[in-house]
Amino acid sequence: MGKGCLTVTKYFLFLFNLIFFLCGVVIMGFGLWLLLDNQSFIVVLSNSTSVKAACYILIGVGAFSMLMGFLGCLGAIYEIRCLLGLYFTCLLLILIAQVAAGALIYFQKETLNEEMSKIVAEVLKNYPGNNSTTEQAWDFIQRNMECCGWSSRLDWSGNMVIVNSSQLLFPCSCQNISASTGNFSDSSFCEAQTPDWPVYDTGCAASVESWLLTNLGVVLGICLGVALIELVGMILSIGLCRNIHTEDYTKVPKY
Image (cartoon, rainbow, N blue to C red; front, top):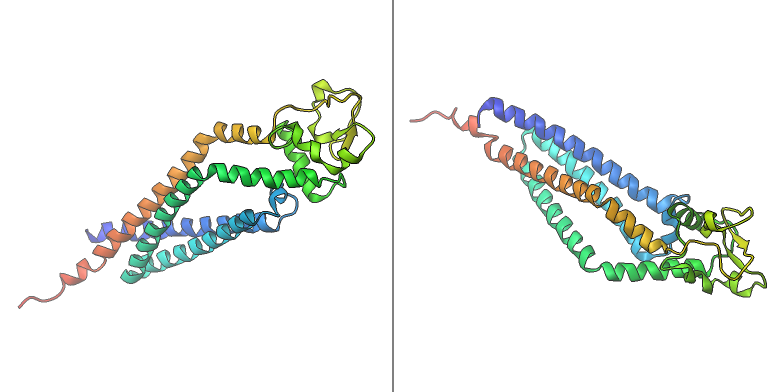
C-alpha cells in the first residue's frame, strides 16, 4: 500500500470512527430515554423486566460503541497497531452478536408475543381511569392505531372498573368515531347506550404487526446498512494495521 493510499485510509478510518462514536451517543441516549421518560408509549411496558433489560442493553451497547469509536480514532491517527487490532476484533464480535440477537428474536418471537400479552393484560385489568402516565400512553396507542385491547376488545372485559360498574362503560380511547354518537372523551371511560360497544374490533397486536410489516423494508435496510458499515470498518482497520509500518521497513539499510 502506497504512502498516499495509507494516509487516505487513515483519515477515512478516523472519520468512520467519529461517526461510529456519534452513533454510540445516539444509542445510549435512546436507551436512557426509554428508561427515564414518563411521557412515551414505552411506559406501558415499564413493569416488564425484559423491557428494562433491553434498555440497559441499549445503554451498554451505546457506551461500548463510544469507547470503540474513541479507540478507533486514536489508533488511526497515531497509527497504533494494537488498538487497530483490538478495534477489528471488537467489531467482529459485535457483528456476530448482532446476527445471534437477530436469530434469537426471530426464533423466540412467540415467547415475546406471550410476554407482551401478559404485560398488556395486566395493564388493562388495573386501568382505573385516573389519567395516569401509563393510561395516557395506552390511550395514545389505541387512539392513534385505531385498535382496542391487545388481542381484541374482549381484553377489556376483565377490567375491574367495567366489571364493578352498574353502567355500560367502555374505554374512550377505543371508540370508533364512525360508529359512535354523542361527544366522548379521549381517555378514561365512557358510557355506552347499548351492550354493543362502539369501539374498534381490531386488537393492537394486529395493528403493531401491520405497522412492522409495512415498515419491514426500512428496518431491514437499517440493519443491512449497519452491518455494511461495520464490515467497511473491519476492512479499513485490518488493512491499515497490516500496512502501517511498511514504509518504515524499506528504510532499514541492507548489508
